[in-house]
Length: 358
Image (cartoon, rainbow, N blue to C red; front, side):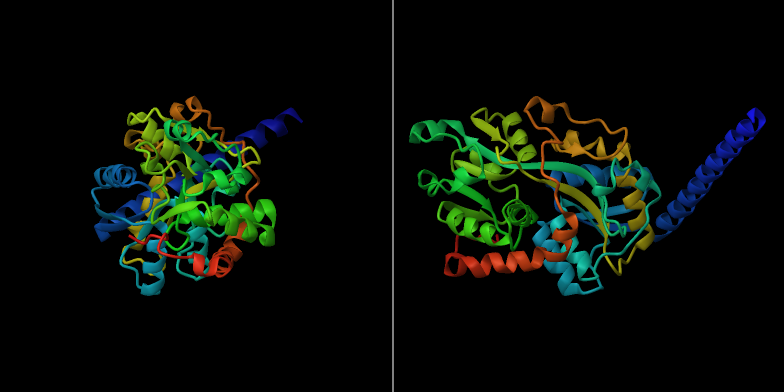
């Protein structure tokens, strides 16, 4: 029996070594093929500095000319939909997966089973068909200007239902669901927390208090510190960036009823002109080497890769990656487009020039 166990252990080790060698050989072949293509074009939907630091590291590591353009997730989705399988970029990086799921459902993302997929900490952080892979996790909540609230004599909201109270009329900003994945996540979150019918009623009431719907998901956070926006709905890591830039009048709030989160992803566009460079990009993004660079660009999301260095700024400001609802990614993948349409149908004439596209 002892000899059998020794043989079994030796066989397991040999199989593990064989698998590792095969993966190394596959990576070597992929690198050569990608370098032969010589170029990669990236659409980035996280903040520009974040995209740039990953792009520059990839280019330096592999010697592949890498260009990027920063666009909101909604802009990327619209562009790729219009190009319909003949994309002007190869890969997508950053931004919440709700628009990725819509794009995947339209058949415009290229499935790829990544060699480094095993680095992801849990299956929920990747598409089951390999159409996108998560690299970070951002917590949805509120950012408020404490000085303005004090001046107005209004308490800080504690939860989602507080936001529809009349005292917050004209004080709230969120992003535009036509252009920002953040807003699509907000819609999906309310549908999952309240049910579709109640969620749409909620948005009618919330709209009465909204001063502006920004093009980008990070738009509200950038105006809270200066007081132009008093209450911004968005990802709290964007608020941390503003606090560290000197705006100590910003308070971060996790809604008391619970909240959801984005999975910031990366994916390959169907019909990419540089398919091997695109696959190599995915492999690079799924390494601690790549994602650990995020904080150097003041991107303080939680990282969803094994052995990645979590940003201490996130926990310092009270963010908990586990204090979130169990977000239904499959429902979001199947129904986001319908929910967004129903959202605008429900608002009707209220969907006015507060919805910014520039």
